[in-house]
Image (cartoon, rainbow over all chains, first blue to last red; front, top):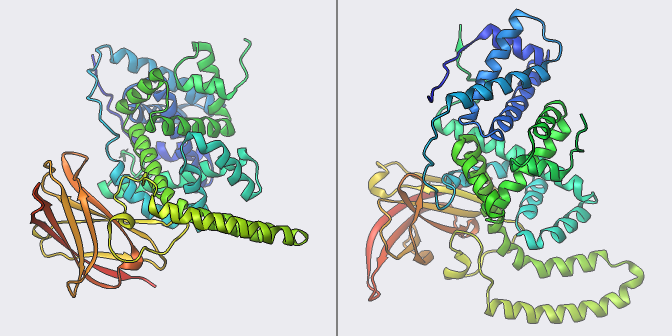
Length: 196
Length: 281
């Protein structure tokens, strides 16, 4: 039977969890976002349905456990909990869901394109040019173009790939924030469902 | 237990769901513990998404990524981002094609060492001659625009906009006059030259060809776009997209008139939009 688990985390438990990630609140927030991304990847590539709900469920279980006992190695523990949550989710999902219709093109890119235009303007001109140059050609031209770009910048192709990746992450985060603003929701860090 | 080294090939097989359980557990443990590996894996995932939106993955992988996007709102958002980035980058291609010969000459002039000037000067003469021929030929046969939006450079009257390298795009949405509720559409342009991309919201898509004319407050035509086809955007809504260089839009009030073009060439006004351009200095 398909079903969702209801969960809510107390502010105290969530603060304890953040403090365990890092004593500095800002760095803890960054580590929390990184951890969420790792967990989303984990559930996605285990083909679990509703990955973001399973991420919340995992974090809630770990945060509660932190109030009950000392956990020596946090990351391996979180991974172990995530595996348990994934296996339970699969047991709950024993009725196959009908596949949704296949869109002819990914929906919603129009809105993202608008936000991306705005976010692009927030980048320094050099970064903007770099990221657009990097992505503007198709596969056939890409290798040569990327060699040229890397040579222009005086860096190795691998370093170029990392540099562009980090700019892309910034843009993606900026676009995501704008989508959240547009639909009136915050991100997981600021607006998690908290029970006082 | 002996484990495979974490090569790109192994990580790609992880993303494609082709690993054994032991291999998959090893990859998971590794990226949870190692930030660098996590970054590498995410870069590969980005590359897979980029390949998917371009339809460049093998059929099995294409199908897997489609299913992943359908199963997860977060993944769908990332796919949409990859698509938006692809389209924005594609919009730069035609700009870059116009820029290329200038780059060639510029690079040549600035990078030739002094002792090679004599040879360089002769080569510049040859290159410049070839480029004049190339530029004339290119004007006669403009390259196919890869962007999704119509190209104002090809369909509008008047002087071509200034050539810029990687002209940034500013996008705005305009509501029809009857739906705007008297509220003025303001288009605020920061200092610099931009491609202004206007989305004109429509009541319905209909199989029709439309013509859009942008006029200033003195009713002078600033740009004309012909052969426009409405596009579906999201949940059944429809819109037209037109692009124009910001240096053709001085401060002031503008009107976009939208006309339906019948098979016999007659036109009928089907909608209007107004907006005010403000330049931020």
